[in-house]
Image (cartoon, rainbow over all chains, first blue to last red; front, side, top):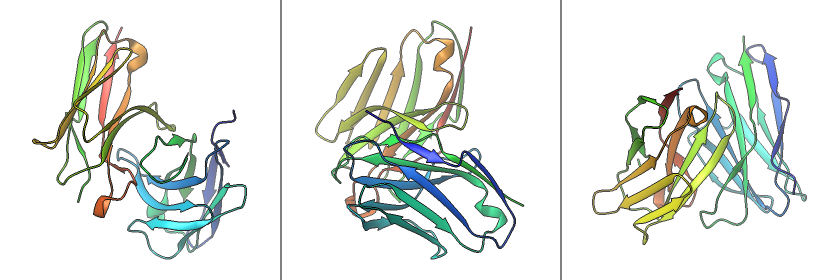
Length: 113
Length: 112
């Protein structure tokens, strides 16, 4: 059984640029959730995809967008990067929607200069 | 907001001692989950407790849930230096959705 993987591990961008983060879900999981974690804070929910459809969205602007593929892997895209977007971005996969255990990837550390 | 809030924010203990962390939330939930995070890495799921359960155990971990007080506690018995990490509770999202909503966490340091 393969765990959740994320790429890249670290990323440095400048303000105004665009970034794409990737997540491969654990085998057998059809739900992927994305979180943003600023330093010293808890993870903040960005959005969730279930079977390729967006299932819910947190309080993030439209420049945060996502996608889930038929193999249930997922992408998080952020346009027009701002300094405050610097954070650890976490992806979590699970099976179904009924509050089942989420398995987290190691995260992508994004720094915006 | 249904976000859980952990207390204390930081906890420092000696190896072998017990560590207790608390989580309070504001509205009814379907379930509550506890996670551990080491040094800004991915979160590791510890225990899920459903609203109709009062207590769950997993190894040295004991979680209680008091829905009347809207609170939960995580007890780590006989702590080890390897337990040093941040611990988060996650409750249901707005409108009773099953999307976990995290608090700010408790930073636990276990001194050898």
